[in-house]
Amino acid sequence: MPDIRNILQRNLDAVQQHITAAAARAGRPPDAVRLVAVTKTVGPDIVRVLRDLGVTEFAENRVEGAREKIEAAPAPACWHMIGPVQRRKARDVVALFDTVDSIDRLEVAAALQRRCEEQNRHLRALVEVNVSGEASKHGFAPESLDDVLAAIADLDRLHIEGLMTMAPFDAPEEVLRAVFGRLRELAQSHHLPEISMGMSDDYAVAVEEGSTQVRIGRALFEGI
Image 1 (cartoon, rainbow, N blue to C red):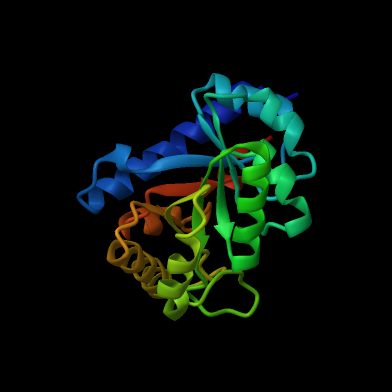
Image 2: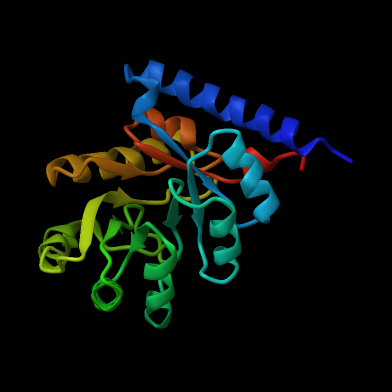
C-alpha cells in the first residue's frame, strides 16, 4: 500500500518548486503565487493530509460531496468553488464556500447576492472570462467585462477580487501565453489583484504570465 503522506509531500514539493522556478523566470517572488489544491478526485482523508502538510487553500467544482471535505479542513483553510454555479445550489454554495471563482452569468451573481443576504454573509468572488472564445468554455466574453463588472458592483455582498480563465486543453505554448497574457491585461486594466489561471498541465506558463493562484489537482495526486 502506498505511503500516502510521503507521495503527497513529494508531489507538493515538486509543484512548489515549479512555481518558484517559473516565478523566478518572470522576475516575480514565489510568494506572489498561491497554490489552490483541487480535491474533486480525492476524499476527506487526503484533504486532511494536505492540510497537515501546510496546504491552506482548496477547491471543489460541485456542491455534492464538498461538505465532508470542508469539514476535514475547516477555517482558517479557504475553500474555493471553481465549477459553474447552478442558481438552485446558490444557498449551499454561500453556506459552504469562502470564495466563488467562477461567476459566469449575471443571474448567478444575483442569486449569490440573495443567498448572502438571507444568511447574513459576504462572499469573495472572481469573474470567469472566456478568453479563448471556445464554445465549450464558461465565462463572459472579454469585450463584455466593463458592463459585467459595473452590474456586479451594485451587489454589495459580493466582493470581486479578480478574474479567472481556463486555457484550451493541449494548446501550444504560444496559445497559452496569448490567453494568459490577455487575462492579466484585463485584470490590470480593471485594477483587480487576483488572476486565477493555470492547472496541472500549464501552470508554469500561467505563473510566467502573471497568475496569482494556480488550481492544481492531478499533479498533486499522481501515484496515489
